[in-house]
Image 1 (cartoon, rainbow, N blue to C red):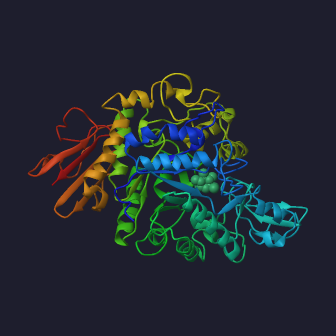
Image 2: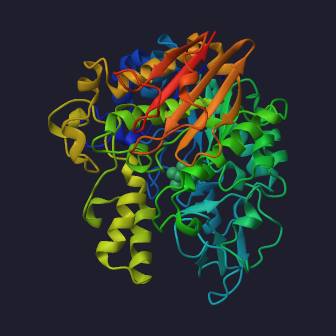
Image 3: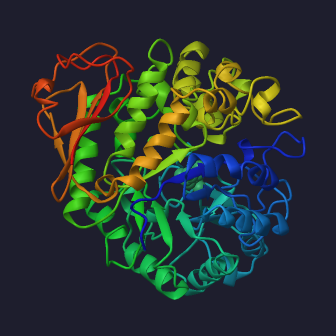
Length: 546
Ligand code: GLC
């Protein structure tokens, strides 16, 4: 399977394009925007869940894996989407949320009705209401167990209480999930993204965690690699494009999940590099990003995965992360420069790049001021928790504004005017103020736009085998302001310099060595030539030796 020269574009259907005026995006909306995606040049679309769901976690609480939620359209719409995308050389990747189901799923409902066969699909523990099975915490805040008085049993939910964890130790569960894969494969999809896939194997016993929230017991659990290999083998998806979302994993495990020949996945997402602004590792405590640490983590995963012939999915943004330009860049004076630098920095790494809708426009965070404007369950829970921890409303909102997952869930910005062309109705969530000026229409018409820069990066990956397949080594590693690396393939070399600061910085190895014989500037984010004395604010310079 060749995915090295491919680029994936992530669509959050609820916020991409509404076609029927109900304020929520839908499949027909996506179909109407395929020409744009084809113009951009992406190869695959990863669609986050559009299956029937009570939407407690925006569709990551799946009530039926093999149907379409009417709010997104019909199965016929989906089939049209597959066919229309294929005509444009674009494949679809579906999001398989197999760690848990919604508590509205028929399996869970049967379990609640007392059917023990279905209780064994989940983790039910007998006991009394005053004695929780163990002290693990939900990723969305609060305990990871919920008591069902009618059964006298607790059930495990690592996420919202409406998302009950599936028991993969039960072979019947594994068979059911294989059927889901076969169903969508038969519909002609190109691949799959597996949600929090490294959490699927739980330990035999549920013990209190004296040191943390329990994650060390269930992350990369005892049978996780076996389960994945079995799923891939029995559904015959080994030659399709697959990506696993790995929560708090280790490099050694990443090497197996996405290793050539391990029979697991094509590639994986790890998140360590997106925690460099978490104070003491806590997402809900703000800190200025530590760029030295960002470089170290990228280096560890890039060079480490290379050493074991494994493959990374490379990304800054998704539907759970704040917008990268607000996070590591600048939304003011250097908005354009910083967004382009960040794009170049991630796209030229060794791995398959993922673009999250709107990232290619330099969309910023939501900038909402009032908690009433937020929709996400995690955000609303943590707003309460932060207030309970003693933060004032103003302090709590400062954290929420930086960290809320809603930052990435505001509607896609297509054009000037009402709701940026997303909907003719009332959008389910508001738009950032910047929507008035940052949109597809403006950027398609501007040859110097961030959008055009992304398009160029996608094209370069296809033109230069070196970008898709070359080896990587980090350079300038003593410099806390710069991330720089060298790619090599045969005689060809590429060096990428990224200044992460809003001021100029010197490089250790004088830039004036370029352009020495044979080197030429392949890409930069400044129009005026650089004197090569230093890197300008947020400057990106990419030199190529053929
Ligand atoms: C993943 C998804 C996230 C969801 C969670 C639970 O992290 O990306 O949106 O809330 O899994 O399914």
